[in-house]
Length: 162
Image 1 (cartoon, rainbow, N blue to C red):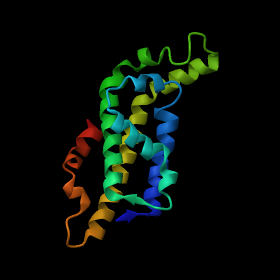
Image 2 (cartoon, rainbow, N blue to C red):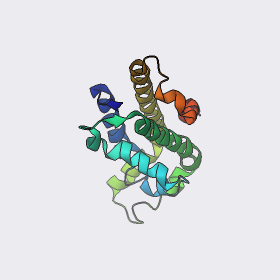
Image 3 (tube, one colour):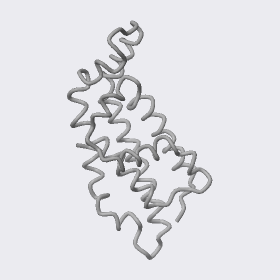
Image 4 (cartoon, one colour):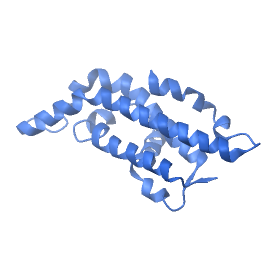
């Protein structure tokens, strides 16, 4: 099944905007690059957050969309463990040793708000998952929904909350 639901696209665009602006920005990017996520996971995150326009006309296959949601959920889980406790240190050299005063203020804002911004990202991912799963269940009819065949989806709540 191809997902072309405008509500789904709206949530995906919101996730991408939030991720680019508040999670992966010039002050935190260096810290994020130190995370231990495999290249496939990074590619799926990029597909979800940067390339939504590519799916606008053809739609998303449910299994692709679930894979992207799972990758982003794993990112949230790992970022809380690997980045959040050390972000101030990891971000300290991200712009250079001589920063303008405005850049220093912006970096502090990015560092101080990283935890709450991860929570917002987790909430948006959960909203997307719930909407996609409802659409999946509705379109499956008597057959099993796609989400029931992806065992890792059982962990999504743990990834987003812990």
